[in-house]
Length: 329
Ligand code: LMR
Image (tube, rainbow, N blue to C red):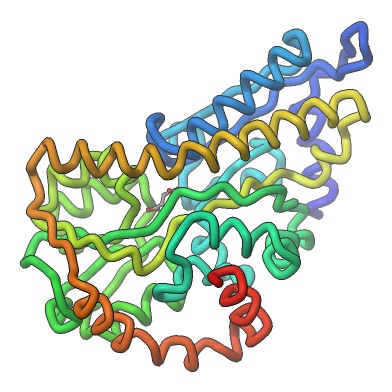
């Protein structure tokens, strides 16, 4: 059972001893798929520094970026079996567990990080983050990355028709898939760690991502055009293993929780700046032609994608739409 697995795994995380002030000695692993110069890694680093300093070294935090420990395919399974104690995946990768994780894929729902944060910190958002409880997984906190933009190899894209006949990589999920099919394009979900090669080899013509992910993974080396769209988002949840979380005594948990809060603050503070800097770097490198849409062109996309809301209302829930719209102001 998940319980038995997690319980045996938690002996692995906590190495048994206690420091003088009652903090449990342990090594905590945090695994993620993105590069170092990203909001997620900066948040994880801040968390590590806080926990290691405040525990006087009793707790060690090991961060594994770039899918170096686990990738999109296996990180969740390994969290459930407590081989890793923290992961922070893109929420749209969990729509198989709960279709409400499609919220970051709802076209043009949120314009800013602030709006997305307000939703995930709110009652509905918290409820969704808590919905993996049955797997022994606890959703602790939302970390933003930012709005996604379209890159591709075929043509400058400035209208829905330009998508016709192309194939795009998505993070996964029914809504992202529907966005592409609504515009006459195909899509395929590919793990982040395999995306550069997939673009390079023409498995797909394009993809959608934040400036920070595009820049730090150098997708512009294997793409020709980038349209600034901000139509969907990458947002993360920091997930932990419930058994591990509950195995901590009060002194230990207090430090780890405060470390997580510090990581949340840093990820939320840094996301906008890191994405702005990444856009500048992409401009400077000059490898992609950048398309900036007029308000009229954005309106065209909005109209083309509007039917998606009706299509998914039953699956995602009118209450979720309402809470998201409220957060979006
Ligand atoms: C992607 O797969 O494109 C992103 O979700 C990766 C990430 O974690 O930001």
